[in-house]
Length: 234
Image (tube, rainbow, N blue to C red; front, side, top):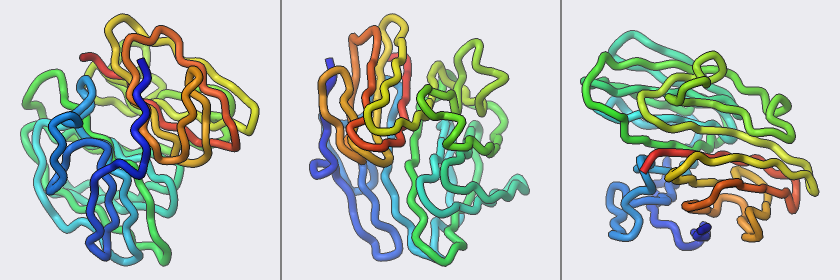
């Protein structure tokens, strides 16, 4: 089953400095049918204006993955971590027992990100943050693991505390790639750029595709595309 969730149907709000679209219920957007997908709880599509950002605020017991689509985001937190993550790269924050952080666009142009929240397998644990470059060229024609808590991914990806995997893929128009799901898994796919065919379903840029009871996913680019996929336990 692949359920298309067109970008035009997403909730959201424009705060001036932040134009946010929500694939799932978040903040003032509530939809009982979109409270999450497996352990995936939040997928926000955020455009952050230059020299603005999210001021310090707390989180706990959540795995927060930020995929930078355009521009760059600068992170700082009360643990002393600070770092700048550029377009195509990823940062991960395991909130654990609690962390206070800020995310700013210190660039001269708009920064665009996907912010993905995954429910951890357990509560607690010391909070952590990390960032890693993932050159788009290295993902050409194949899924590359960006963040994961699944066995076998330890040397490749940023670690998260959940039975889940976040993957990235770039395809030139006409190219295809496949992804194999384990039993009883949930998938959620969003093209950051470009339209794709996903097992016969056309998914345009920034649409969501909710995937369940699928063994093999075949993604074919209708136009040059950049794709992010989350694979989680129920």
